[in-house]
Image (cartoon, rainbow, N blue to C red; front, side, top):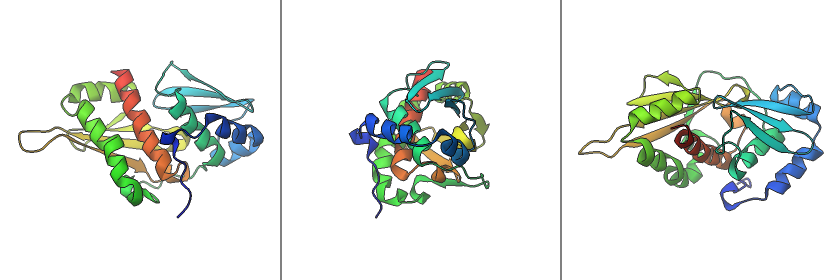
Amino acid sequence: MPTIPDNKEGIPLAHYAAVFAAQSGGEIALRLGLDYAGGFGLTFFNRTLNVTHPEFALEASPASNALTNSAARILVLRLLTEGARTPFSGGFLSYREVPWGETYDRSFDGRCRRRLAGTFGARLSDFSRSAEALGGARVSLGDAGYDLPLPCGASLRVILREGDDEFPASAQFLFSDNTVSLWSAEDLAVLGEVTIRALTEAN
C-alpha cells in the first residue's frame, strides 16, 4: 500500500512549502497547464487563489478563510507539487471508487458525507444559495445537487437528499474522473472538509 499523507494529523505546512520552493515554476506550470509569472492563479470554488513561488504565500480573491487556512494551504501545495492535469472524460467517481478510497471510505463518511448532511440536510435552500455563491452549476440529482469548480478543469459534485420521518438526510460527494490525477484519496477527504467549510462560510 502506498504511503498516504495524513493531512488531518497536521503534516507540517513547512515541509510542502519547501518541496514547492525546490521545484521549477516552469515544470509545475507545464505539469498542471497553468500560466507562471512568479506564481500561479488557481480557480477554486468561484475564487481566484493567487500563489507566489518559490516562497509560498496564498491569497484568495474574494477573501475566504475556508480556502486559506492551514488545511486548504496544504491541499493547494499537494496539488502544485504532486498533481498532474489530465482531461475530463465525462465520468464521476464516488470516494470508494478513487484509488485507495475504499480503504478510507469509513473515515470519509464521518468526516464528509455525514457532516454535510448534518449541516445542510434540513436547510436545502441555504445549501443551494451557498453552492451557487461558490460557482456551482445545478444538476438534477438528489433534492439538491451542484457541480463545484476545482482547479485544472476538475469539479466536485455535491448532492443532498432531505431527510424525513423514516430516513435521515444524506449526502454524496462525486469527483470528476480527472480529479484523481490531482490529489490522493486522503487529499480528497481534506477537500471534502474544505468544501463544507466553504459552503458554511458562503451561507
